[in-house]
Amino acid sequence: MSKKRAALLTICILFLAVCACYFLLALYYGNGFGVNTWINGVYCTGKSVEEVNSELLSCMEAPNILIVDKDGNRYFIDLKCVDYKGDYLPPLNAYLKEQNSLLWMNNLARKKDHALSPAVTYDEEKLREAFRSLEPVRQELFRQEEYALFRDEEKGWQLYDGLTDRLDIEKAYEALKTVVDQGGHTLDLAEEDCYYDLPLTEEQKTVKRLWEALENFQDCDIVYDMGDAMLAISPKEAACFVAVDEKGMPLLDEKGQPVLSEAAVRAYIASLADRYDTYEKEREFLSTRGEIVTVAGGTYGTKLDQEAESAYLMENLLKPDVHTGIDLNHKPAYEKETTVRGRNDIGDTYIEVDMTQQKLYYYEDGELMLETDVVTGNMKRRMGTPEGVNFVYNKQKNRTLRGPGYATPVKYWMPVKGNIGIHDAGWRSEFGGSIYEKNGSHGCVNTPTDKMAELYDMVEIGTPVVMFY
Image (tube, rainbow, N blue to C red):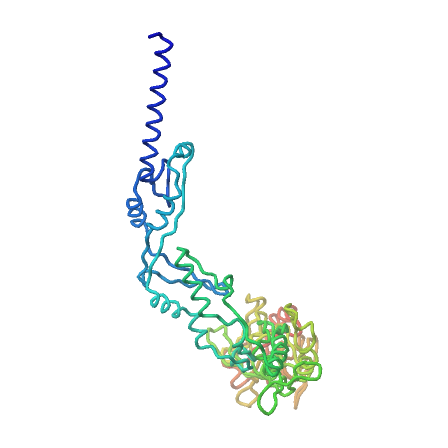
């Protein structure tokens, strides 16, 4: 046999051997999954359907189904509670049936990865029970088909809307079943169009127009600047400004605007005054001696102009620019006003006269600038210096103080309440102690001349003066 014929025979034998191997492997893969086949992350090459099913089920857990409502709230159903079971045999058999084992070589160059969902079984009654226990479903079951206004104690006028965005419970449940049957994990109720609206009657359309006017009105942007607090008019307070009919329902005018109750507006301003007016009111004051003392009202303090503020609200509450979502800070009008506003309007710059200790202190920006002994009104002659929170309303030099039976020249005079003031007393050689009990002044605060000169230069008109025993 020639070499040529021998080589040709060898090639034929090798070809037949390769073909035999190819077809033997095709036969092998025909009874299992082809080369380089992965399903759900499991290597399946050469394995039977039963083997792959067993491996997939060993990795499978009953999933939690996420349910999202129209407001984005998230709820979960644990499918373990509904006897959830999976089986990959049907999809595996379907995949294997479509596999062409003769083309197994096509998979050598690349990994062939597939995702299969199992055929599932579960207890439908338990699934329905779990679904009906969800918060949005329970709310829908008890939701009444009403459309009416009501008064909330904190939020003012509110609308009970039982007609819009109703949840179609049966449609939502069927959508849930589809997700579970297909091996899914999420149900978006809005995307699945599970909400619907009921039509409004003519009477309900009137209620809707009334609610739209009230909702806009209650969203009020007026913010009262009370000095130490910014007070926004709340929906609860705005609701009180609306007049009502004999049935207690809010009234609208011919322009579709709420009708204002002037009495309610005045009551609101009166409540502000009651909380923030300090004029002629007692105060709690932390004295230098370390005690909290109660000080009577005096000439110093704030007092709201209630007439002006009531007129302001009546004029501005219905204006469009008060309902734009942009705060409108409003400083109220005052009949009496102090430099520092708020419930603690004494601030940290003031004169303190402790008449029990017979001491005068001057604080500026919270720092003690001057301290001195003084002599206050004569207690034995019933000329005791009056208690109260007053203020320096004038400053004069070289003034003669006059009263019944006396005319006294002083170098420095700072009146704080009527003819009661703080001044030097050059005729005295001693201050402090118990002098005031029998040899006190006619009611003024007698101060050493050198200390009075310092105090006079530091204190400005308007400075509060806290006087107490």
